[in-house]
Image (cartoon, rainbow, N blue to C red):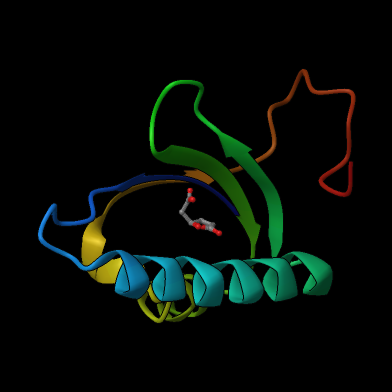
Amino acid sequence: MLFHVRMDVNLPQTMPENQATALKKTEKDIAQGLQESGKWRHLWRIAGQYANISVFDVSSVDELHTLISTLPLFPYMQIQIMPLCRHPSSIRSNDA
Ligand SMILES: O=C(O)C[C@H]1C=CC(=O)O1
């Protein structure tokens, strides 16, 4: 199952720099592991914003929720999720 996910990050201004740096480092390690596993299919920065557009390929909504809600930055993100299905005019398979 494919999901289009938008994540907007809002770290509190009061968060100490070293805490923010550590959170981002852990988040990066997890995000790169999930990309290597194929579950986090795409990760794109939205130009000019501390936000990303991602595509996840997971087996259930519950799996998606678990992945996203256990990210270190989850408490500081606004998240919008759109489930995706095949478009009848698409010339690509879901594997593309
Ligand atoms: O920077 C972000 O967009 C937030 C988050 C998503 C992946 C990652 O490494 O951090």
